Image 1 (tube, rainbow, N blue to C red):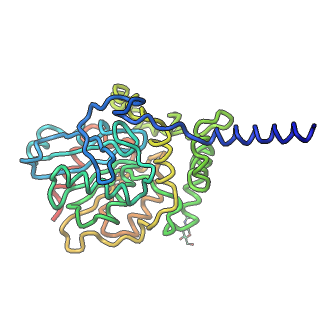
Image 2: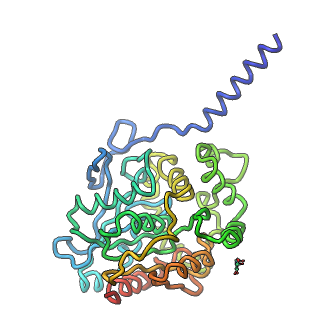
Image 3: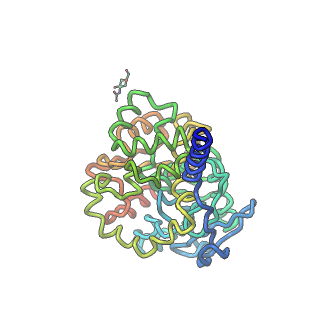
Length: 344
Ligand SMILES: *[C@@H]1O[C@H](CO)[C@@H](O)[C@H](O)[C@H]1NC(C)=O
Protein backbone atom coordinates (compact mmCIF):
# COMPACT_ATOMS: atom_id res chain seq x y z
CA UNK A 1 0.00 0.00 0.00
CA UNK A 2 2.74 2.45 1.03
CA UNK A 3 4.78 1.47 -1.97
CA UNK A 4 1.85 2.13 -4.28
CA UNK A 5 1.31 5.57 -2.77
CA UNK A 6 5.02 6.38 -3.16
CA UNK A 7 5.03 5.30 -6.79
CA UNK A 8 1.89 7.30 -7.54
CA UNK A 9 3.33 10.38 -5.83
CA UNK A 10 6.60 10.00 -7.71
CA UNK A 11 4.84 9.71 -11.04
CA UNK A 12 2.76 12.75 -10.14
CA UNK A 13 5.88 14.70 -9.24
CA UNK A 14 7.65 13.75 -12.46
CA UNK A 15 4.59 14.66 -14.49
CA UNK A 16 4.42 18.03 -12.77
CA UNK A 17 8.14 18.64 -13.28
CA UNK A 18 7.87 17.69 -16.94
CA UNK A 19 4.86 19.96 -17.35
CA UNK A 20 6.81 22.88 -15.84
CA UNK A 21 9.55 22.53 -18.45
CA UNK A 22 7.12 22.55 -21.38
CA UNK A 23 6.35 25.96 -22.88
CA UNK A 24 2.75 26.50 -24.01
CA UNK A 25 2.29 26.45 -27.80
CA UNK A 26 2.99 29.82 -29.44
CA UNK A 27 0.01 32.07 -30.27
CA UNK A 28 0.87 32.50 -33.92
CA UNK A 29 -0.21 35.76 -35.56
CA UNK A 30 -2.94 35.43 -38.15
CA UNK A 31 -4.28 32.17 -36.65
CA UNK A 32 -7.37 31.90 -34.39
CA UNK A 33 -5.22 31.77 -31.22
CA UNK A 34 -3.03 34.73 -32.18
CA UNK A 35 -3.25 38.42 -32.90
CA UNK A 36 -4.20 39.68 -36.37
CA UNK A 37 -1.46 40.52 -38.84
CA UNK A 38 -0.93 44.26 -39.27
CA UNK A 39 2.54 44.52 -40.82
CA UNK A 40 3.60 43.72 -44.37
CA UNK A 41 4.97 40.19 -44.40
CA UNK A 42 6.71 37.97 -46.89
CA UNK A 43 6.69 34.21 -47.13
CA UNK A 44 10.00 32.38 -46.80
CA UNK A 45 10.97 29.17 -48.61
CA UNK A 46 9.87 26.98 -45.69
CA UNK A 47 6.47 28.69 -45.45
CA UNK A 48 7.24 30.93 -42.45
CA UNK A 49 6.23 34.58 -42.63
CA UNK A 50 8.60 37.42 -41.88
CA UNK A 51 7.10 40.79 -40.91
CA UNK A 52 9.06 43.87 -41.91
CA UNK A 53 9.00 47.66 -41.82
CA UNK A 54 10.54 50.04 -44.32
CA UNK A 55 12.15 53.36 -43.40
CA UNK A 56 13.83 56.21 -45.24
CA UNK A 57 13.64 56.86 -48.98
CA UNK A 58 11.92 54.48 -51.39
CA UNK A 59 14.07 51.50 -52.21
CA UNK A 60 13.66 52.16 -55.92
CA UNK A 61 15.62 55.42 -55.64
CA UNK A 62 17.88 54.53 -52.71
CA UNK A 63 21.66 54.69 -53.04
CA UNK A 64 22.23 52.74 -49.83
CA UNK A 65 20.02 49.86 -48.78
CA UNK A 66 20.43 48.68 -45.21
CA UNK A 67 18.93 45.67 -43.45
CA UNK A 68 18.59 46.32 -39.72
CA UNK A 69 18.59 43.50 -37.14
CA UNK A 70 16.97 44.26 -33.77
CA UNK A 71 18.15 43.12 -30.35
CA UNK A 72 16.81 40.93 -27.55
CA UNK A 73 13.20 41.54 -26.50
CA UNK A 74 12.63 43.95 -29.39
CA UNK A 75 10.91 44.05 -32.76
CA UNK A 76 10.85 45.73 -36.17
CA UNK A 77 9.91 49.06 -34.56
CA UNK A 78 13.21 49.07 -32.66
CA UNK A 79 15.30 50.05 -35.67
CA UNK A 80 17.42 52.45 -33.71
CA UNK A 81 19.49 53.73 -36.62
CA UNK A 82 16.43 54.29 -38.79
CA UNK A 83 14.39 55.96 -36.07
CA UNK A 84 17.18 58.36 -35.03
CA UNK A 85 18.72 59.36 -38.37
CA UNK A 86 18.23 62.97 -39.43
CA UNK A 87 16.05 63.54 -42.47
CA UNK A 88 18.91 65.51 -43.99
CA UNK A 89 21.21 62.48 -43.89
CA UNK A 90 18.52 60.05 -45.06
CA UNK A 91 17.71 62.18 -48.10
CA UNK A 92 21.24 63.39 -48.72
CA UNK A 93 22.68 59.88 -48.89
CA UNK A 94 19.54 58.21 -50.24
CA UNK A 95 19.19 55.76 -47.37
CA UNK A 96 16.59 53.01 -47.30
CA UNK A 97 16.39 50.79 -44.21
CA UNK A 98 14.31 47.69 -43.70
CA UNK A 99 13.88 46.23 -40.22
CA UNK A 100 12.09 42.97 -39.57
CA UNK A 101 10.70 40.97 -36.67
CA UNK A 102 13.17 38.19 -35.99
CA UNK A 103 11.44 34.77 -35.97
CA UNK A 104 9.05 34.41 -33.02
CA UNK A 105 9.01 38.15 -32.26
CA UNK A 106 6.19 40.55 -33.20
CA UNK A 107 4.38 39.21 -36.26
CA UNK A 108 7.03 36.88 -37.67
CA UNK A 109 6.28 33.17 -37.39
CA UNK A 110 8.39 31.27 -34.85
CA UNK A 111 11.18 29.11 -36.20
CA UNK A 112 11.57 26.10 -33.91
CA UNK A 113 14.45 24.97 -36.16
CA UNK A 114 16.27 28.26 -35.82
CA UNK A 115 20.09 28.25 -35.89
CA UNK A 116 22.76 30.89 -36.30
CA UNK A 117 22.91 29.95 -39.98
CA UNK A 118 19.15 29.86 -40.61
CA UNK A 119 18.78 33.46 -39.50
CA UNK A 120 21.54 34.57 -41.88
CA UNK A 121 19.70 32.78 -44.68
CA UNK A 122 16.40 34.41 -43.62
CA UNK A 123 18.07 37.80 -43.99
CA UNK A 124 19.38 36.89 -47.44
CA UNK A 125 15.91 35.78 -48.47
CA UNK A 126 14.32 38.93 -47.06
CA UNK A 127 16.70 41.03 -49.15
CA UNK A 128 15.99 38.97 -52.26
CA UNK A 129 12.21 39.00 -51.87
CA UNK A 130 12.32 42.78 -51.43
CA UNK A 131 14.60 43.11 -54.45
CA UNK A 132 17.46 44.87 -52.67
CA UNK A 133 19.92 43.74 -55.32
CA UNK A 134 23.09 41.70 -55.29
CA UNK A 135 24.56 43.44 -52.24
CA UNK A 136 23.11 45.25 -49.27
CA UNK A 137 24.39 46.83 -46.08
CA UNK A 138 23.75 45.24 -42.72
CA UNK A 139 23.44 46.76 -39.26
CA UNK A 140 22.62 44.96 -36.03
CA UNK A 141 22.34 46.08 -32.44
CA UNK A 142 23.04 44.01 -29.31
CA UNK A 143 21.69 40.46 -29.91
CA UNK A 144 21.07 41.70 -33.46
CA UNK A 145 24.74 42.65 -33.64
CA UNK A 146 25.55 39.08 -32.74
CA UNK A 147 23.41 37.97 -35.70
CA UNK A 148 25.73 39.98 -37.97
CA UNK A 149 28.56 37.53 -37.15
CA UNK A 150 26.43 34.76 -38.66
CA UNK A 151 25.91 36.83 -41.81
CA UNK A 152 29.65 37.54 -42.10
CA UNK A 153 30.15 33.78 -41.96
CA UNK A 154 27.37 32.50 -44.19
CA UNK A 155 26.43 35.31 -46.62
CA UNK A 156 29.52 37.59 -46.86
CA UNK A 157 29.20 37.71 -50.67
CA UNK A 158 25.81 39.43 -50.28
CA UNK A 159 27.08 42.21 -48.02
CA UNK A 160 28.20 45.67 -49.10
CA UNK A 161 29.34 46.38 -45.54
CA UNK A 162 28.31 45.71 -41.96
CA UNK A 163 27.98 47.52 -38.65
CA UNK A 164 27.88 45.75 -35.28
CA UNK A 165 26.56 47.93 -32.46
CA UNK A 166 27.45 46.57 -29.02
CA UNK A 167 27.13 42.99 -30.33
CA UNK A 168 26.48 40.47 -27.56
CA UNK A 169 29.37 38.06 -26.99
CA UNK A 170 29.01 34.35 -26.38
CA UNK A 171 31.40 33.39 -23.58
CA UNK A 172 31.72 29.91 -25.09
CA UNK A 173 33.31 31.02 -28.37
CA UNK A 174 36.43 28.84 -28.31
CA UNK A 175 38.72 31.59 -29.60
CA UNK A 176 38.32 33.65 -26.43
CA UNK A 177 41.13 33.05 -23.93
CA UNK A 178 39.58 31.29 -20.94
CA UNK A 179 41.03 33.72 -18.39
CA UNK A 180 39.39 36.61 -20.25
CA UNK A 181 35.98 35.00 -20.74
CA UNK A 182 35.99 33.73 -17.15
CA UNK A 183 36.82 37.16 -15.76
CA UNK A 184 34.10 38.80 -17.87
CA UNK A 185 31.60 36.05 -17.06
CA UNK A 186 31.91 36.50 -13.31
CA UNK A 187 31.39 40.25 -13.61
CA UNK A 188 27.77 39.51 -14.45
CA UNK A 189 25.16 39.32 -11.71
CA UNK A 190 24.96 35.76 -10.29
CA UNK A 191 21.39 35.44 -11.60
CA UNK A 192 22.61 36.17 -15.13
CA UNK A 193 25.49 33.75 -14.78
CA UNK A 194 22.94 31.07 -13.91
CA UNK A 195 20.63 32.05 -16.75
CA UNK A 196 23.42 31.72 -19.28
CA UNK A 197 24.51 28.39 -17.78
CA UNK A 198 20.99 27.07 -18.23
CA UNK A 199 20.82 28.46 -21.79
CA UNK A 200 24.14 26.86 -22.70
CA UNK A 201 24.21 23.55 -20.82
CA UNK A 202 20.56 22.64 -20.25
CA UNK A 203 18.59 24.55 -22.90
CA UNK A 204 15.54 22.30 -22.45
CA UNK A 205 15.15 23.84 -18.97
CA UNK A 206 15.18 27.44 -20.17
CA UNK A 207 11.41 27.88 -20.10
CA UNK A 208 11.16 26.58 -16.55
CA UNK A 209 14.16 28.65 -15.42
CA UNK A 210 12.79 31.89 -16.81
CA UNK A 211 9.30 31.33 -15.44
CA UNK A 212 10.00 29.77 -12.00
CA UNK A 213 9.66 31.96 -8.94
CA UNK A 214 12.17 30.33 -6.57
CA UNK A 215 15.39 31.87 -7.86
CA UNK A 216 15.96 35.22 -9.56
CA UNK A 217 16.41 34.62 -13.31
CA UNK A 218 17.62 36.97 -16.07
CA UNK A 219 18.06 40.56 -14.88
CA UNK A 220 17.72 41.66 -18.49
CA UNK A 221 14.23 40.18 -18.77
CA UNK A 222 13.37 41.60 -15.35
CA UNK A 223 14.68 45.02 -16.46
CA UNK A 224 16.78 45.40 -13.30
CA UNK A 225 18.36 48.81 -12.86
CA UNK A 226 21.86 47.28 -12.42
CA UNK A 227 22.15 46.60 -16.12
CA UNK A 228 21.96 50.29 -17.02
CA UNK A 229 25.05 52.49 -17.04
CA UNK A 230 24.71 56.14 -16.08
CA UNK A 231 24.50 57.13 -19.75
CA UNK A 232 21.85 54.45 -20.32
CA UNK A 233 19.81 55.93 -17.47
CA UNK A 234 19.95 59.35 -19.09
CA UNK A 235 18.64 57.81 -22.30
CA UNK A 236 15.63 56.16 -20.62
CA UNK A 237 13.20 58.91 -21.71
CA UNK A 238 14.09 58.20 -25.35
CA UNK A 239 13.78 54.47 -24.77
CA UNK A 240 10.37 54.94 -23.14
CA UNK A 241 8.60 55.17 -26.50
CA UNK A 242 9.02 51.41 -26.66
CA UNK A 243 6.01 51.30 -24.31
CA UNK A 244 3.80 52.03 -27.34
CA UNK A 245 4.39 48.63 -28.88
CA UNK A 246 5.78 46.65 -25.94
CA UNK A 247 2.85 44.17 -25.80
CA UNK A 248 3.40 43.24 -29.47
CA UNK A 249 7.02 42.14 -29.02
CA UNK A 250 6.34 38.87 -27.19
CA UNK A 251 2.67 38.49 -28.15
CA UNK A 252 3.31 35.03 -29.63
CA UNK A 253 4.83 33.81 -26.39
CA UNK A 254 8.08 34.17 -24.46
CA UNK A 255 9.50 30.85 -25.48
CA UNK A 256 9.73 31.31 -29.25
CA UNK A 257 10.92 34.90 -28.88
CA UNK A 258 13.24 35.65 -25.97
CA UNK A 259 13.93 32.14 -24.66
CA UNK A 260 14.94 30.76 -28.04
CA UNK A 261 17.04 33.88 -28.55
CA UNK A 262 19.03 32.95 -25.43
CA UNK A 263 19.45 29.33 -26.42
CA UNK A 264 20.84 30.31 -29.83
CA UNK A 265 22.88 33.29 -28.69
CA UNK A 266 24.63 31.44 -25.86
CA UNK A 267 24.56 27.93 -27.28
CA UNK A 268 27.43 26.05 -28.92
CA UNK A 269 28.06 27.72 -32.24
CA UNK A 270 28.94 25.83 -35.38
CA UNK A 271 31.69 28.38 -36.07
CA UNK A 272 33.78 30.85 -34.11
CA UNK A 273 33.58 34.54 -35.05
CA UNK A 274 37.22 34.84 -33.98
CA UNK A 275 38.15 32.56 -36.90
CA UNK A 276 36.40 34.67 -39.53
CA UNK A 277 38.39 35.87 -42.54
CA UNK A 278 38.15 39.37 -43.89
CA UNK A 279 34.91 39.39 -45.90
CA UNK A 280 36.26 42.27 -48.01
CA UNK A 281 39.86 41.35 -48.90
CA UNK A 282 39.89 43.86 -51.76
CA UNK A 283 38.45 46.68 -49.68
CA UNK A 284 35.11 46.45 -51.50
CA UNK A 285 33.32 47.06 -48.21
CA UNK A 286 34.00 47.62 -44.53
CA UNK A 287 33.00 46.21 -41.16
CA UNK A 288 32.63 48.50 -38.15
CA UNK A 289 32.13 47.59 -34.51
CA UNK A 290 30.95 50.19 -32.00
CA UNK A 291 31.17 49.57 -28.27
CA UNK A 292 30.73 51.71 -25.15
CA UNK A 293 33.42 51.30 -22.50
CA UNK A 294 30.78 51.48 -19.72
CA UNK A 295 28.50 48.79 -21.18
CA UNK A 296 27.05 46.69 -18.31
CA UNK A 297 25.67 43.98 -20.60
CA UNK A 298 28.46 43.40 -23.08
CA UNK A 299 31.97 43.38 -21.58
CA UNK A 300 34.25 45.88 -23.26
CA UNK A 301 37.34 43.78 -22.42
CA UNK A 302 36.07 40.90 -24.53
CA UNK A 303 35.02 43.19 -27.36
CA UNK A 304 38.49 44.79 -27.42
CA UNK A 305 40.05 41.36 -27.69
CA UNK A 306 37.79 40.40 -30.60
CA UNK A 307 38.56 43.66 -32.41
CA UNK A 308 42.28 43.08 -31.90
CA UNK A 309 42.10 39.53 -33.24
CA UNK A 310 40.21 40.63 -36.34
CA UNK A 311 42.26 43.51 -37.74
CA UNK A 312 39.87 44.01 -40.67
CA UNK A 313 37.28 45.33 -38.19
CA UNK A 314 37.20 49.07 -37.69
CA UNK A 315 36.72 49.34 -33.94
CA UNK A 316 35.18 52.43 -32.38
CA UNK A 317 35.15 52.54 -28.59
CA UNK A 318 33.04 55.23 -27.00
CA UNK A 319 34.28 56.54 -23.65
CA UNK A 320 31.52 56.83 -21.04
CA UNK A 321 28.96 55.11 -23.26
CA UNK A 322 26.77 52.25 -22.04
CA UNK A 323 24.77 49.72 -24.02
CA UNK A 324 22.13 52.09 -25.38
CA UNK A 325 24.44 54.63 -27.05
CA UNK A 326 22.86 54.28 -30.53
CA UNK A 327 19.85 56.31 -29.32
CA UNK A 328 22.04 59.13 -27.94
CA UNK A 329 21.68 62.46 -29.69
CA UNK A 330 23.51 62.53 -33.02
CA UNK A 331 25.03 59.05 -32.57
CA UNK A 332 23.11 57.35 -35.36
CA UNK A 333 24.11 60.05 -37.83
CA UNK A 334 27.74 59.73 -36.74
CA UNK A 335 27.69 55.94 -37.06
CA UNK A 336 26.07 55.91 -40.50
CA UNK A 337 28.29 58.72 -41.84
CA UNK A 338 31.41 56.89 -40.69
CA UNK A 339 30.11 53.71 -42.27
CA UNK A 340 28.83 54.96 -45.60
CA UNK A 341 31.20 57.85 -46.31
CA UNK A 342 34.58 56.64 -45.07
CA UNK A 343 34.66 53.36 -46.89
CA UNK A 344 36.31 52.58 -50.16
C1 LIG B 1 45.13 36.12 -19.77
O1 LIG B 1 46.36 35.45 -19.95
C2 LIG B 1 47.21 36.06 -20.92
C3 LIG B 1 48.42 35.13 -21.17
O2 LIG B 1 48.87 34.54 -19.99
C4 LIG B 1 47.64 37.44 -20.41
O3 LIG B 1 48.49 38.07 -21.33
C5 LIG B 1 46.37 38.27 -20.23
O4 LIG B 1 46.68 39.53 -19.70
C6 LIG B 1 45.37 37.57 -19.32
N1 LIG B 1 44.11 38.30 -19.37
C7 LIG B 1 43.37 38.55 -18.31
C8 LIG B 1 42.12 39.31 -18.55
O5 LIG B 1 43.67 38.18 -17.20
